[in-house]
Image (cartoon, rainbow, N blue to C red; front, side, top):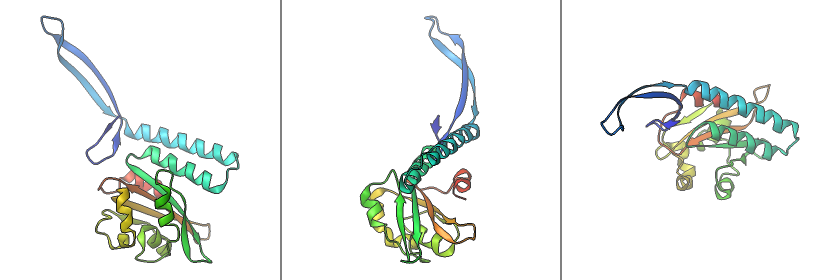
Length: 193
């Protein structure tokens, strides 16, 4: 397992063989191959996470505990990423953060009552528009202006998708944030869709 310059984790299957030794018997030359098995490992981890989620469902956990477990599963798949799950309280008109297992309580408290609004953080915008929101640069994106305090948590990019009911009403949002400045990887986009 290694990390690409763009922050993505890569899994490689590496095989090698020493083909020449020096006069003291120490390896001098080797040949080998490296095969990218990232897709296979990614699917294995996702399958394990899905199995764990189903096990947690069977335990009748309180909703925040279940959602924290779900978010932590996604964090284990994507390196340098934290997940935030917020639920919409439509009657009161705000989103509340119910799961963010890798962020301190201070962060959760400070984003606990975000209104769904076109220019209010990725999760507020996603809840307002009922569509995904991609923020490649939190330092300069206007939707992140209301969350300037979040810079202390080193969240550089954010990708949010609405959580929709069967009738397409917004129930909440699922956000993945990266601690690295980068675009969204297709696997991440697939995961939040």
